Length: 252
Image (cartoon, rainbow, N blue to C red; front, top):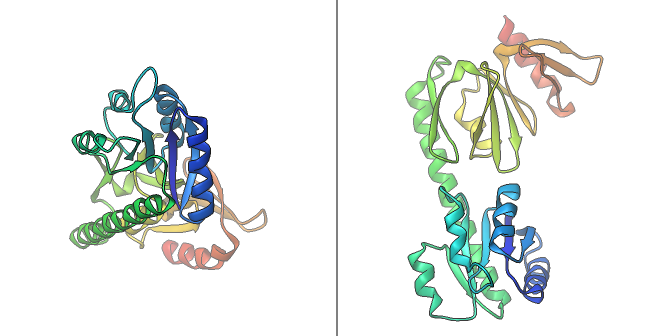
């Protein structure tokens, strides 16, 4: 599911967009929020962290191009909404992903979403290939460092310092022995592929743990584990049996 927000000063235009998205792209495009000014849009972006921002250009106060002044790093794609074809030149200048002419044509929105899906798939495939190459280079050495993609670049971290990882929508929080966490701009599934399976186990759809930091396992109270940092996490029922096998093997 692709997440998006709409920044558009006309209420009717916002409602039309949401209606089209629900009718023609119910399984592909999710509208997280809508805003009628650039400043409201900035707040919505920070709160929702969308994949795409559909941005009107002509708005009272600040026009759509002013949105870029509020961000040092753009972590989302921008699709401009405009009634004027000449704005396509400005869209290109601002390196927008695409633009849509108003009034909105549902087929054009479908086209943009399909194009985004293809690009996202290509990026994910490239990331997976790079992960594979990195893993081959480092082998299963838990003392190795790994390059973690963040919102601003990459952060190097020792694999042995990672206690557990927690899914956060399209991001992952990686908790370390320092007591902090690194926000990684990848899903938990991608992070799981980056880490050596000999040491890391997916105990739940939202949690990946370093088996070296499992302090205890309680099978009488909801199948929970206690980590060395005092965090208690419940194991998904379907993963319990496999986890016990991995745990006893790790402790042999």
